[in-house]
Amino acid sequence: MLRFELPDGSTTDVEVTRLFNAGYAGRDQSSVQAHIDELAELGVPVPAAIPALYPVSPYLAQQTETVAVQRGKSSGEAEWAIVVTDGGVLITAACDQTDRDLETYGVAWSKNASPDVLAKKAWRLDDVADHIDDIRIEAWVADSTGEETRIQDGSFAELLPPEHWLEQLREKGYAHSGTVLISGTIPMAPGVDQFASKWRVRLTDPTNGNTIELAYAVEPMPEPVG
Image (cartoon, rainbow, N blue to C red; front, side):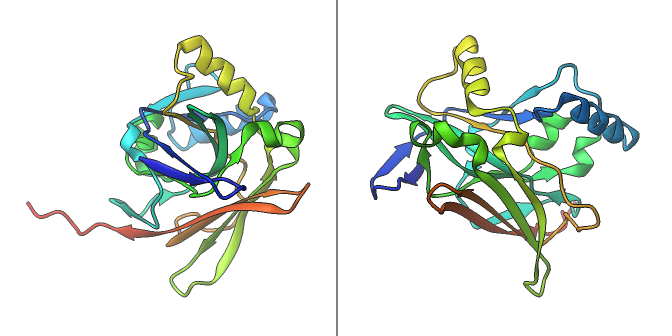
């Protein structure tokens, strides 16, 4: 069960019944293909279709401040999420923590290894739909000393829009209360260590200055015994 605070101070509770992660979801599909080619050189399997849509276990949609990971090569991805509720569709910030080692075996597998962290605030999609492309997506990573470095900076205009994915959900019969879809991500800044101990993601609506933010720490699990 997730709870979101809306700009008017009201709250909406949602029991997540389906969770999806979009992949290779940039609007410039030629750039997406170039990215796929780069990943293939690193051993990541080529998707059967682009954009891709990966089902994820619903319990992995979490509003948490700590994410436990099994391996050091695990990193976040700044994204937005649509949350379908009985009262309409919400937009919020999200970060898809992904196991990069598992990604070389299968992207869907890697998406199920760690939570999709969602913010505790949200906007109604209807309230931002007329300027959705202007909303900014930013992310920062921090090292063990707490020093932050910006790793992602872009906007909704770089990704396929929420309406595209809502139409996909409608066609598949999944556009009902309890469905959450994570958008896919924007490029990371070169030279910044993505395998960081902390991630922070922020959405900013430039029309009014409103923001939605999440932050969490990444904590390694103990080594297995036996």
